[in-house]
Structures are given as structure tokens and as C-alpha cells.
Image (tube, rainbow, N blue to C red; front, top):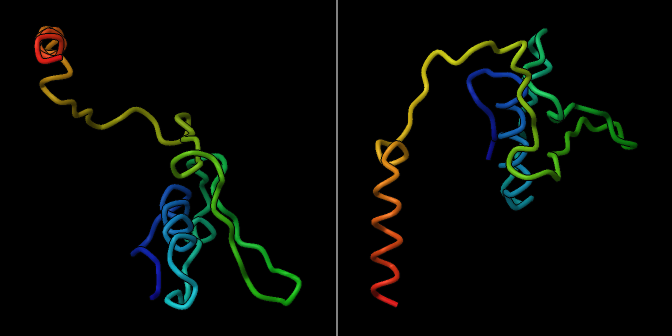
Length: 105
């Protein structure tokens, strides 16, 4: 299996590295560090390519939660759009759910 994307940067590289590390070695052919192809870093903590003692190019995914990266808002700028569930805005739904849960317990 070749694990890569059509193009990307730090976040995509973190996702690729995470998927590659969770793929059994016998099924893994290669993965790509797309953040080495771009000149702008969009996140801190992204995997970086290195050459191991055997001369093989490698990268390691983060051990932090999620993809292990922190976005750099000063680089990516303000969101173009923000999507939320209509239920996130309805506090009464949460109160209703909690009341229903109490009645069933």
C-alpha cells in the first residue's frame, strides 16, 4: 500500500504518517512527506523526513493526541467558513436530554 495524498503540507503529512504507522509493515510500501515539497509551514510538530543509520529516508508520527500538530493561525489566517450543528446552539436540547436521562435511570 502506498500512503499519500495528491498534495499537502504539515497537516496532511501528519495524517499520512499516522495512517502509515497504523498500517501493518507487511502491507506498507511507502508514504510521502508532502510538507517537504512546500515552503510554508502551517503547523508546529509535523513529522519531518530524516535519514536513518542505514541510509533510508524515514519519518515518525507524533505521540501527541490526534495528529499531534498545532495549527499556526498567523499563517493559515481566519477561517473561510465555520460549520456547527444546529444542536450545539440549542442549549434547551441538552437540558431536555439530561432530564430524559434522569427519568430513565
